[in-house]
Length: 325
Ligand SMILES: Nc1ncnc2c1ncn2[C@@H]1O[C@H](COP(=O)(O)OP(=O)(O)OP(=O)(O)O)[C@@H](O)[C@H]1O
Ligand SMILES: [Mg+2]
Image (cartoon, rainbow, N blue to C red; front, side, top):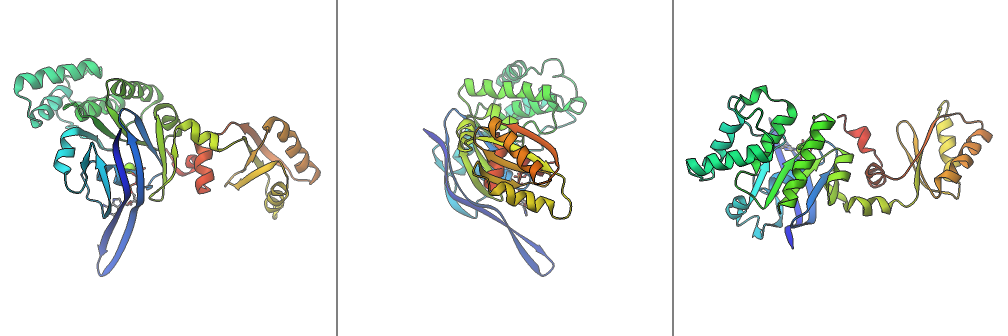
């Protein structure tokens, strides 16, 4: 069963500065399906349109055009019903910094209509579940990044939503706090919550998402399980840096392009990415080729395809180069 279905969802922002009117097309026609019970990832660089899509799906922003069904309800006509079934944790978080985790949770529960006793019980439950106990009663402004993000997630699930939207849940966290939060997200899935999260971390999308969509420039450029996406890039990836002087790079490019074992070649900023069959055999041949042509190689590596290669193939750019984390 699909918990989200969208058809050609679009969003344009009009900005008016003086008499000039300009329009930003942030989301340019997104059609996708998210299955109930899965962790769905939205991977893309800064400005791809991830947050805008998420805000539309969580009823915070009306679409310019297109349709969507979220938790069985129509996005345009039944947004009130959708809101009862979803949780949303924004990129910035929604913590009141001057209150403690417990106070934040109590307030949120009461906003959702829990009476004081039920709110107390729910706050306790969440403090245990997200392991907030050691800091639950001091002011949130004293929390580490990871502690604050866990509180953000707790605030998003106070009302036990079926579907939770998390916008960049681990951006800026250290590896240990990220791993910890991944565990919490997996636990949510185990308990039946569908999680839709955005990220610009390749490893996060790879490790955490059951399925993902790769977004760039307001459009979905690829969609599938991490493995199926990587398998589309059959073969291995050779990264080859050539010392580029006086057009040497161009010469190397056309030489490589002409080799039968090179299926595809991309000219990155610092190095070429070559998609080849049987990399371990092809690599020596490439090095010989460069050597015979008098071209100096500055670096070389061989790797199995990653989600970055998927992104690179679809967009001609590297996600790693794009997002200065
Ligand atoms: N309220 C707004 N008014 C005008 N332009 C906007 C508005 N909100 C977003 N945009 C533009 O829409 C595009 C997509 O933005 P969005 O925040 O959805 O990207 P994102 O993928 O979430 O990026 P990031 O990884 O940086 O969070 C950007 O060019 C952004 O500047
Ligand atoms: Mg964003």
